[in-house]
Length: 103
Ligand code: FES
Image (cartoon, rainbow, N blue to C red):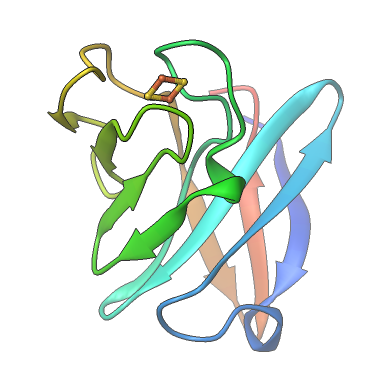
């Protein structure tokens, strides 16, 4: 495990998402009603940045073809998305967000 500090909780308002990169990984951190979740920023359909899409509740919509994913599980919830996103363990310590990028 290699938890890396990527953000502070105040950086991402509820209902918003931000993208970060570390060691070649593009990571999207989403702030939903019950906390923060980290998934790959790469849409599994055609490797497009999900940050360019929109977050509605716990579902992120890809802006390229409209595929949707649950950011808590990475699961695809609307086609053409059919392959789950990579998810990353995330911990909030004090007011900082740490993500395990080696998971
Ligand atoms: S690239 Fe995301 S749905 Fe096609």
